[in-house]
Length: 128
Image (cartoon, rainbow, N blue to C red):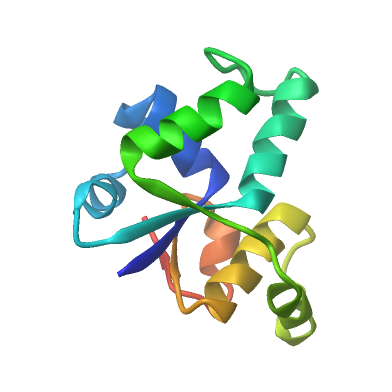
């Protein structure tokens, strides 16, 4: 299965894996799944870190690539096709990072691993 790991799930995977649900942990550790981290999530993590709203063991520029590689998570660029998917989404909330992930999941036929209940309300497969 192709899985898009959202920002919170990725941070927890790296720093507080006990916060992952049993389902999320099982999906992430299942070697038959392809895991991706969006450039939108990287941006969100960097923004929150820089603003002092997210504590990490090291700067995201070092942590994210190292942690992605260690956990077998592939990078996913945000592309024009994904951006244009936004016009087809209902406006259920305004978080731009969540909406970018939803667009990418829809465009790339992925499920999203996320604890975010707002994402679960969209027409996308959200797992937790």
